[in-house]
Length: 487
Image (tube, rainbow, N blue to C red):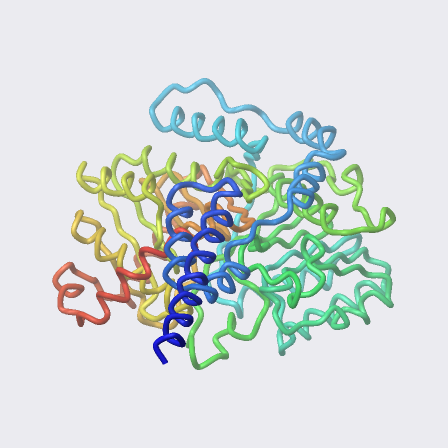
């Protein structure tokens, strides 16, 4: 009997040693930031064997071949289009006062990081409900004459998803070029055959970066989280809504869905078109399915509105965390107030410190988060950081009327950001995102009015209210925070 227990102990010790060596090799063989490195070491060492199953879903990076393809396609045949775009827009004037100087510096940041041009004369409409958004979007898709380009993280096989598919099939049958790009994980349960009718009518549909089968390529990270619609190269949509019944408030679990999306008419659409084509060309195999940049940028001859903006994209194909740096630029430029809405509040140290500095400098920092989780670990980590920020003078609101999914940031009533990127590690480092950075007091004022209206449906979370939570809940929050670099 003693011999049996000795063998078992040696067997378990061998497994632990092999697990430790494998954990160290697995984590350090790929370049990561120090926070993610320690988080994965924690998972792989504290949860032997099972930790590697978790890593298979969350930790593996995209193959370098795919990332290099992404970089190549982003630049392939695009320089001519970029040059053409830049010639059509007037550069910002020399700064004469502080506001113009801040605008100019922010614009220069994105021109340097993302080769993003400034479009100055856009008409921007803000949507906060799926009913209004999809009604307008589908009407414009139905009226399309030349091309319809659609890219979403989620397109579900449900009522609204089938309605969109039927509409696209009809437009493809009419001879309109239809291209649909979707993320296989975000659109879980939707098979490629879902789009067979569209393909039969001459349309195209493919998974982002050709993720063939979730059974063999089941990464939860490095997903296409962008939401882009471009119609005839003239009208564009960008924001937080996906295509699914839950975004219309039809799922009791979430209740009314509160999100923010933009409709853009003007040169800003070029930025969405450019991003879609780069993503599409990196995802398709056949040369005949490639979208060629030359034909999709109609000349803008009129001033549609007064909103200046830049479309900025980021993703793991680049080490530059472009949207995060944009958030930092806005936070650090604030003189009066910073108002933020995000479903996931899991900032890295740089963003956390910037918010702390702003709050301690007398700037009014307000952050609105949901009152309920859609991902348990993620929400507990969000609660942890919300608690920490209340102690630093930041006002935290929890939105009570359904699920808050908006990703907005408003600065001093002058600048704003709206898009797909949350205020978390995943959007900064792990997913492909796109945001509109807006330089216009009128549009920013409208976004701030929406924020104020949302406060009426929210509760203030104080440090005392967090302190009154149970010890078990505090433990879950602290534990989830340890995993925040990989959530």
